[in-house]
Every structure is written in C-alpha cells, then in structure tokens.
Length: 305
Image (tube, rainbow, N blue to C red; front, side, top):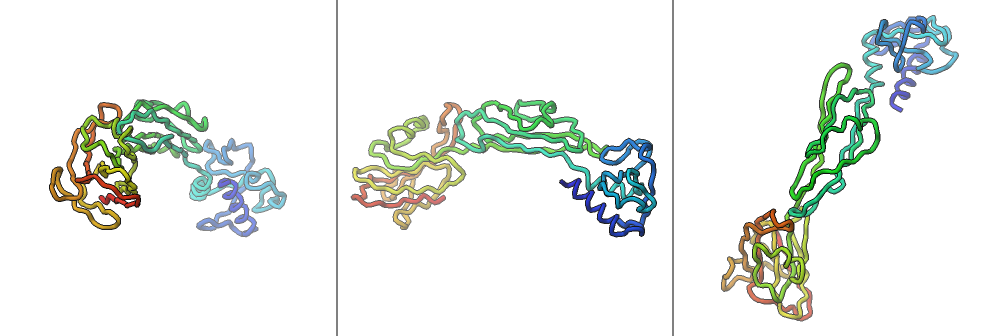
C-alpha cells in the first residue's frame, strides 16, 4: 500500500503541473526514452541508466500521451535527487516480530519456553539471523512466515535476543530484538494452626497443608482477609523486608523473632530452597506472636512493602 500511495502522489504531481516542469524540491523536466533501454525493478534500472520510472508503473492512463513529449509505454528520466527520494518512498525496511509463549513465571520452577518469531526481509537483504540461548541460526527461516523455536529449560530470569544482520542500499547494518522471561520468587500469606516456624527446606509444606496462598508476580503488597474460627497464626512470607503491616487499617508492631511485645515477629530466611531443589532465595518471615481468632468476623491484614 505504501508503494501504491507513493505512486499515486507522484502521478497527481505530474497531472497538477501538466506541461510545466514537475517539482519535487526544484523544477525538473522529464524526458522520454525508449522502454527497451531499461531493465527495471520497481520501475528503476540500476544498470546502465540511473533513475528511470515507467509511466505505466505510475498509472496506466491515456492522458499521459503527449505529456512532456512522452507517449504511453515510455519512461521519464528522474534526476539523482528525485531518484533517491522516490526510492526512499518505495523502500521498505525489513520487519520482525519476536515474542515468548510464556513471559513470566515462578523462579525455581524449570521452564522450557517457546520463542515465536517472524522475519520478513522486504527490500533489505538479510545476511544473518540468530537467536541466543543455544537456539542458533534461523537465517533459513527468513521470509517463511511465523516460526517457533524451543529454548533450553531455565528457572531464572532469561533474556532472548534475535540478532539480525542486513544490507540496506549497499550499507551493512544490524538490529537486535529482545524478549525477556521474568522469574519471580514465590511469596505466601495465610493462617496456620500448626506451623509455628519455617525452615529453608519447607517449600513443599508451604504449598500443601499449611493453609497458605502462594503468590507469584511483580507486586510485593499482599492482603489476607482473615476469618479464623480456630486459633491460628497469621503469616506473610515475602521477598522484601518491611516494617508495615496493618490489621483493619491500623498499624501493627513488628519486632524481631521472639520479641515479647510485638504483634508480628520478623526474621530473614536466607538460602530458602525453591521448587527445583537447587535454586535458593532469601525470604522474610512475618508471623503473629500469638494465635488469632477473629470470632467469625473478617479482618483484613495488609502487608505493605
């Protein structure tokens, strides 16, 4: 559509000036030549004659007869400046899309991701195309539509890069496109009548039987709407260190683990082992000093980083 639109504009310019010189940046008269002298691509001839545009490529219309002395089927000569301008309007750079099937997930959970890509050379010449993370050369897949590649398993934040080398109007260039899988450490909140402490090896027990809700994502604030009829500890297990937890909108006191007067106890837990058994993280534990019983009411506990 871009090329058709440009051609129509050029045709309107020709009609608008009629027998007067056609202007781009300055008046230039078009000169007709024989079509057989030209072997053009997009109406241009890079060999022998510079800058010829075929009238029928502009618009097939008998009104062109006699314009600037030309006849239908002949061509009009462009100056170098005009040639460069028209070529720039017709030229389309390469295009590429590059995405991941899964953009984020839990750190410590091994994920085999899928890379989606589509590379179209258009008027560029693609001389190289590779994807990192052991995927490798994808140059044979240029101009073949939507493609996928399977990336090696990862449990961490990983950036994938599509590196494209190209030649544009005889000048070499390169361009990278990136897509990042972001891995977030898990966090938990909830209540437990049985769990009074958390060890570095307690990943599985936090997910099953503890009464906790796991959260995986970029946010660090958590809200636990507690409706506790059997006395239980209120817990927050977070990736951040904070001194701000509210209950029904009121600030609570937070002290070190074992503090005799604080409403919440807090301690760091370095080396907490995540799902795959090898990846570790530093988490922060927050637990009410005494068990809570809301008496049938719902009390919102809000963890504010």
